[in-house]
Image (tube, rainbow, N blue to C red; front, top):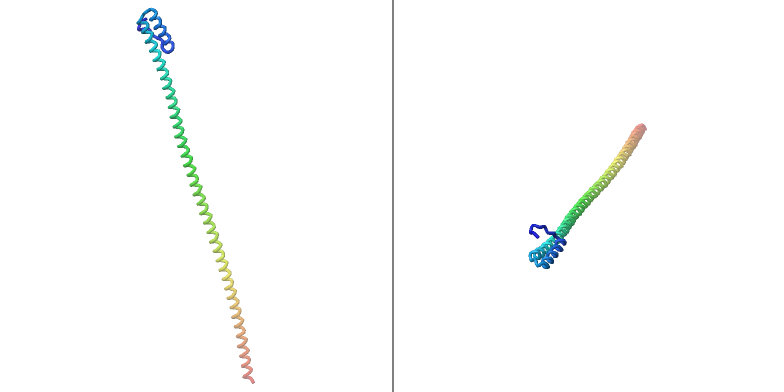
Length: 167
């Protein structure tokens, strides 16, 4: 067989190599036996290379899968952190709203208390003003009554003096 002849690889090449080796030994053709051994070695190397390629492909697929899982885990952690941050921000905002509402409520209560105090003071002032006006009116009436009584007393005194001088 010529060296330009194409040999089969893989399992078929290994079988063909064994056949060539056996035929070469039977025919006492060292070249054919050597070519058979070389073909077997080449076929074994091809099989081994194919197996290594398959293993490498499998390892690459596993590495790609692990990398994808790692990326997913990182993304999950990022999203979890983002959600936690969002929730924390919402909780802070809710707390701020509650604090503002509490402040507004307390301010409204304080304003209501102040308004009630102003109303009480106004009512008290009106009562005191009314009471003072009533006292003033009563004092004026009393003064008028006393004035009248004094005039009557003067008139009686004058009348008594006038009668006393006529006797």
